Length: 345
Image 1: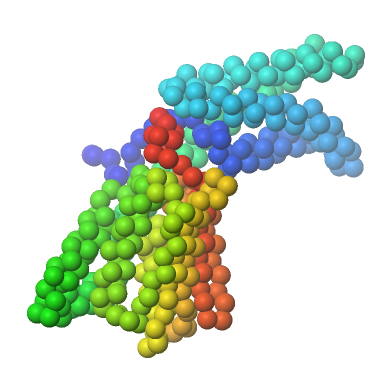
Image 2: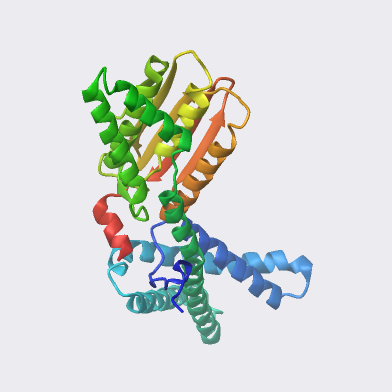
């Protein structure tokens, strides 16, 4: 029997050692393991806190030193095969543990060789356990990657948009054939992107161009009711982002903010680079109405999931609603194509 799409083997790779999410998980995991060790060592609850602090005071400086070393050599590690990279990580852990314990022994006279050996072995066991954990996590997330691809391949544009867009094009065929032809090209470009493999990151410039095509179609249908306020002069065009990270939000902006009202409305799009992060802020007027909440929540959940899959804790999506305005703020790390190719190894 042929394996299903969710059973594809996951390529072994080291975690991104410069990723904030990876670093936070390592810190939390090590501190949790130290707490478990303190529970095993100390049977009295009253003394547990003091024992844990004593152990952390030894483990934490060594851990921070280890993370600094791994952060420094991370670009070289991603070029190695998984087995070689894992061996290098363990060797670096051993070297840091030996150097740290030797320095402690030189400063503290009552440290024994057996205690040093125990700390070194404990460090190696923690490093090995973390490597196993990150591999299990990668395997657990692989079905979500496939699901994100399938969701992108589905009709993200609502049937009413396709129907209305075709009608808008037909209405222009006799009065303005050239504009109708341009609209059909925009529609074809939009669906071409929806149907291709969207698992990998793509240049932000491409995503913005796709959004322009989409909004041009909506402008053809809605006329003066829709105004687009672009602020992209400081946009990093070469930033790599998940495909279809903005278009579903703009679709929601039209559906929730422009269509319910007969008055003209403005959709503001502000994309800029700040402190090594790409920010995309979308604002639109908001009109509460029956049956207009589900699609918005689905799009936000889908985009949050894809941001987490690509960038972990280094990306976020925040949304807020005021009395008459809805705002979505996406934050992503600034990565160029060469950096993403290295991370894929």
